[in-house]
Structures are given as structure tokens and as C-alpha cells.
Image 1 (tube, rainbow, N blue to C red):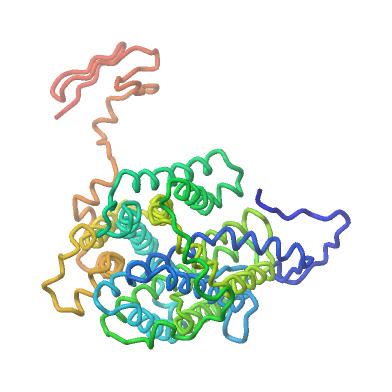
Image 2 (image 1 turned 30 degrees about the vertical axis):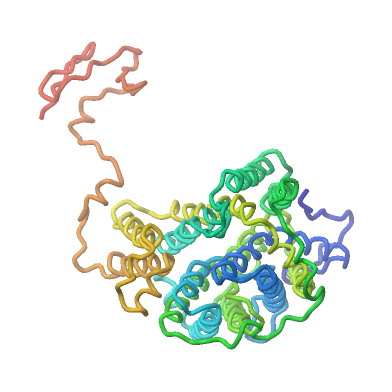
Length: 508
């Protein structure tokens, strides 16, 4: 059950100047804060699982990555909500590892740069993002919903091969890779996700992915497909070791790819700040957005020091603020503190890392599909009539799918080019941005209905067609019916259509 705010009888109407500055009792603050943690927990542990597996890490190292992401996410949340001069929007926003960069980071790892190159690219790209935040409001117009929706949709689609690989077992060299038992376990986990989403309470529905992973792991234990023997190896409590996986390396191509991700992240966080401002009925101006973006970029730039990745606001927690009515930023700060504590317990990360990969695959299909669906929801708000937005979306998503459909497509290209475009998210983002500028900002050469893509987005009826209709005529089951309920015969354009009490001639 989702905890919702209840009004107290006789409570004073004279509250804080800003709704987000309200302070609740300590117990309620941490209870609501823990609810925020549960809402975003599945999303924050998925990126380190994906990136760690791509880098060939064992369960102990992946556990360190997970703990680091929890720790940094908690610190970033506290910075965003409490704020210091020039950093932090002071709004109830939960920060965590952004999904926007996952596929790009996997591409960097597979390109030979390794996890060190990922960390280096995050540091440099985030510092560039920090530097451009004062002028970002001027370039954000180049990231309308037709661009951001395309990119978010592509993020979800490009992660589907990861979910499929997990469902098959994760290790292509294993004897049981792709076995019926592995895929069956993934299917069972996915079925639990769907079942809990349908029959559970709202709280259970929101936690369906996390709970399904627990159920799937129990099933795996029962059939001998889970091994938690290494969970006890290593520290139970530990402070994240700076640069535990080695010093970061800096490659131009990787940095360029990550910079595209940073631009998308800045756009997403701007949207989340505006959205939560509308929910809390608090004033959100350019300065406050800038403070929020600077907190985002600073935490992203420092996160690789503690072995984490790019940070951004979690949209699902914005929705939780709307549902519960709890607008206090201090509640979210408490959630950030809980994340920090969890990040100091690497044993929890090792437990998550020991979850069988088929279980992750079953949950991943829904989780990554949800990301794609979020992009589709954004694209549904785009106007497609009288413009070229449809071809922008079509060409950009198609371009982004090339490295997914044909992973070796760019093997013969220079290494820097392959690193940038081997990521579906980078490919789609570059295409969407350039096409949006070409069609929607550079108006010279544009004509009305200049392409079949424009003409195909709307229906039209000629005045000659309308002239033959009478008041009350309507279509039912493919038949034209007059107002008396009698069918009107439909013939070819050169014939006469006879209607009782009137005759009209349709011209070719």
C-alpha cells in the first residue's frame, strides 16, 4: 500500500513559504523516504548489473558497482534536495544512475576501452555539461519531444538484446545457454511481474519487478539454478574505494558518445524539475533549473571517483510525489540517506549480483520495455500534421537500430567512428537532433506537403464527396446509412448515387 499524506484535524494553515520546505515528524519522514527508495531500487541496480556483466566482472565486483551506485545516488539526492549555493534545485527529486547512458557505456566497453574508459568519458562529458548549464536553456529548443521521445524509445529498444541474453543464461559459452530451463525461468519471472502488476495493490504493483526477482530467485534455488556461496566473501560494511577498478582513461570517441548522453540527461532532468515544480505548485525559474542541472552534472562528474556513473532525476519518483501528495524535499533527503547507508553495505550488492541471470532477463524484458514505452508516450504528444516529424522519428529510430540488428555494421570504419555509432542511442540521438534542425529549424526549402510522409499523416475528403451527403447520413459497419436508417448504395464515381427523395451526381 502506498503511504499517502493525511490532513491533521485542526492543523494550522500557516505552513512553510514553499510546499517543499514542509517538515514532517522524523518517523514519517523516513517512512516516506523509504518508500521512495523502494520505488526506484529496481531502476538504480539495473545499470551496474548491465555494465558490470558487459565488462566481464564477477559477482563480487558487480556487487561493488551496485553498492557504489547506491552510495553516490544517495549523496546526489541529498545535494539536489538540500542544496548549497548554485547547486541543487531544493525540490523532492531522487537522483540515481541514468538509463540514458547504459547502452553507450556498453558500447564503450565492447569497443575495447573497458570500464576505465567509461569512467573517464563520464568525468569529462559531465564537466562539459556542468560548463554549459548556463547556456543550456538556449539550446534546449533543439531537444523537443520529437527528439527526446525518439532517444528514450531507442534506449529501451537497444537494451532488449541484453534482456534476451540474460534470459538465455548470460554466458554464451555455457552448456545450458539458451536452454528451455533458462528461458522457462525467465518466463516465470516475467509472468510474476505481470501478475503482480495486475492483481496486487498499488504498492505491490510499483514493486512488481523487485518482488518478481525475489520470487524468480526462490524458484531458481528450488531447481538448483542459483548459487549464493560467494555472497559471504568480502566485507559486510565498507566505504567505497576510490577508483577501485583502476585510474580512468580518456578516449575522444568515448567522450563524444557520452556527451550526447549528457545532453539527453540535461533535457530529462530539466523536464523532471519542471514537472515536480508543477506538482508541488512551487515557482521554478531558470535559476532554479540551472541549480538543479549543476547538481546533476557535479554528482555525475564525481561519481566515477567512487565507481559509479551518470546521475539524473528518477521520473518514477516524480510520479510518486504526485500520487502520495508528500511534497517535502526533506522526505526525499531521508531517502537519500537510506541509499547512502545501503551503499555502505557491499554484501547487499553481492546478493543482488548473485541473482540468476535468467531471472534478471525475465524482469529486464518488462523493465527495458517500460523505458521504450515511456519514449512512445512522449512521441504521442508530438504533432505530426503538416510537418516532417514522422520521418524524423522513422529515420532516427531506424538509424539507431542498425547497430542492434547488425552488430558488425561499423567494423570497417575508423575506431572513433565505430565507438560513437556502435551505440544505438548515440546513433539515434545524432540523427534526431540533426534532422530536427534540418526540417524544423532551417525552414528554407520547406514546402507544404513536401513528402509522402506528411501527406500520409492525415486524412482529407474533397468538397465533391461532401456535397453528395445529406443531413443525418452516417457510416455503420462499412455502409452509408441515411437519417431514416436506410442504406445508401455506393457505386463508382461515374455512376449516379440515388437517395430516396433526392438524386446527386458524383463527378470523377
